Length: 75
Image (cartoon, rainbow, N blue to C red):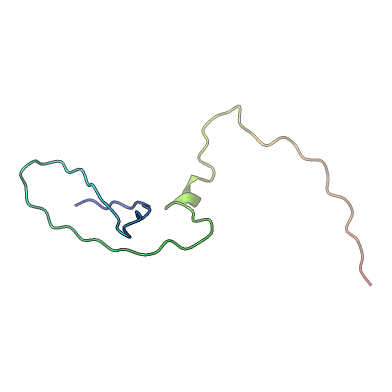
């Protein structure tokens, strides 16, 4: 079983056209489709936050930062 998530734009005929590659020729498949209108704005891909800290390159590092300024006292 495979899950495929994709973003597609409808044509002028108000239809989405899907073409799904499969691993086995001449085989019957059960296909389940859920259609949701994409919400506006920026959507992060699945497992986006698991990428944090995943750079394994010693030349990629955070340069030393200077000291923080003294805090400002508020009345």
